[in-house]
Length: 134
Image 1 (cartoon, rainbow, N blue to C red):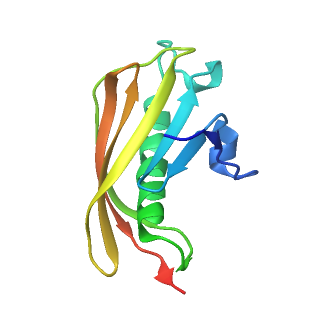
Image 2 (image 1 turned 120 degrees about the vertical axis):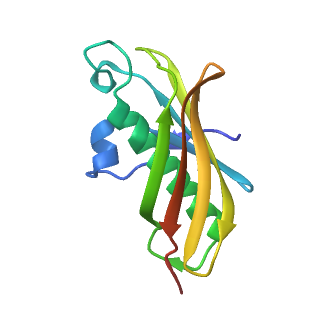
């Protein structure tokens, strides 16, 4: 994966979470987040809601990348199914990856995961409504 950069999105929900970075290669999107104190639950591990948000963002970004230029708007999450498998703690780095598994004219089907130091933290499968073409 190439260099990671901030996702930007100043003033949005993702900006409020803070620290999310992404890397776009011609054939894949990757996300990265180093866990800060604002990201953990009372157990000291990453909050499940943050994991779901990272999965949704990662899968949607991969759909958008795979569709290429000429889209008006962004993919819209229709359905997201996930499994929480592991945990990550303060200071650890989460990595997200995804792949489109099928597509119709209006929908994209995608699967992905969040890992940390080679451990599987969560996996997901989703359906996104494709944005309109220009």
